[in-house]
Image 1 (tube, rainbow, N blue to C red):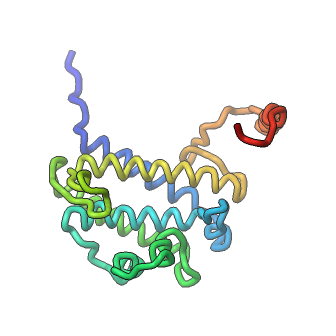
Image 2: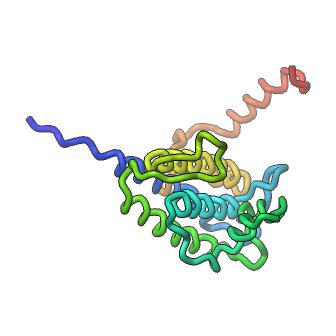
Image 3: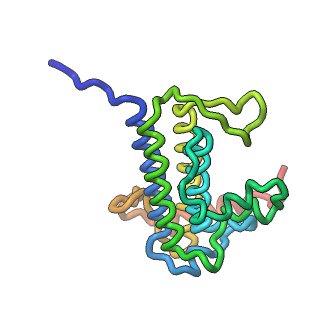
Length: 208
C-alpha cells in the first residue's frame, strides 16, 4: 500500500492564510455601511476597519519586506501618509477605519486585489527567501518568507476572531464559515449565557 506524500509547507501555510482571509470577509457580508463601520469597543475596533487593516498588513509584509512594492499606491493613500517622517497618530490610525469616502465595496475590492498581489509573492519566492521588516526591533528584522507566512496567517486568524465577536454583537450572526456555524444543534444558548452570568455575579466586581 502506498501513501500519498505529505503536502509541502508552502501549500499548507497558503491554505491557512486563505482560510483566514475568507473568514474575515465573511463577517462583513450582508452588513450595511453603518453597521460595518460602527465601533464596538472602547478603542474603536470595527469590522470594516479590520478588513482595511488586513489589506495594509499584507501589502507591507508581502510587498516591501521582499522588495516587491505595491503597484497601486493611489488605491491605498494612507500607506504613504503613515510612512511619512512627520506622520502623527491620526495618520498611523488611518488603516484601522474606513473614511466616509471609502465604501464597504471599495475596501473589500481592494483587499481582494491585495490577495492577488500577496499570492504572487508567495508563489514566486522560495520559502527561505530573505526579507527585512524595518518596523520590527533590532535583531529581529531579518526574516524569511516562511516566517512571514506564519506571522501574517497568525495575525489574520487573530483578527478573524475579533470579527466573530464584533459580528455577533452587530446582529447576532455567528459561525465558523459559510454553511457551518460550528454550534451545537438545539443547545439553549440563552439559558447557558444566563447561567454563566449568574456564576460571574457571585464574585465581587473589583479585581484582585
